[in-house]
Length: 289
Image 1 (cartoon, rainbow, N blue to C red):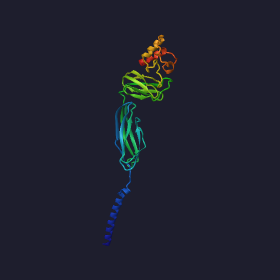
Image 2: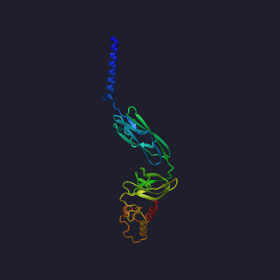
Image 3: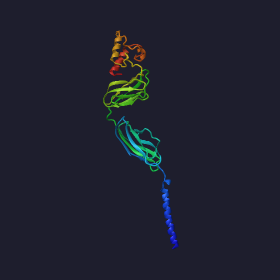
Image 4: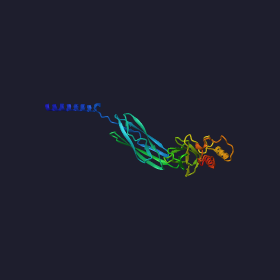
């Protein structure tokens, strides 16, 4: 009987010791803080996007854990999907961040990729988000291409903006070339760059599947445009008429700019107003230049 009583007391003591140990282990003093990665999307569908345009797909990352979350983002698959920065990022407990994925289709067809989020979440070290999108080319039926150069020395101008009157724009490459796509129609096309006066072509007609070439020569800010004989900051029929009157030896005193030969208005830089200027002005007015 004594042995049975002793065993019973030992069992009871063991039971309570176990409960105390479990209670101590579960207390905050012995808990392990850890981050917890939570992502708002597992799929981002961009749908149909016109070739040459950008679409954005936002998604939210939240740290629902109780220690700092560290993570990086990479994309595997078609390179038409990209993110401005892949990190590394750090996020305190309870914080969130909205990140954007960009879709920029370069040709017609379906695209797919996967976002890979690598983190220090012990349970989800890698989280993936599927990306899909379709490039649409049917709305494009024509192209405008050409070059942008310095009017004085012919050097190519990279980084110039070429934009139409409906807001479609592109930027010239370092070698000065550019290419932009449009639906069939008639447009005004303008080129501009830092340190230069902008230049435009009006009534640019693009037909179905047609390639139209428009080369731009930009004048340094403060310099005269070739053909601007009367310093009104425009090249127009008035300049052509003045040039014809001068060739006819008519008295147009005061109508020709005094700095003509050094201003940049002299088309062929011979210091004279002649047929070259008249031809250039008429081409400019008619949109051939």
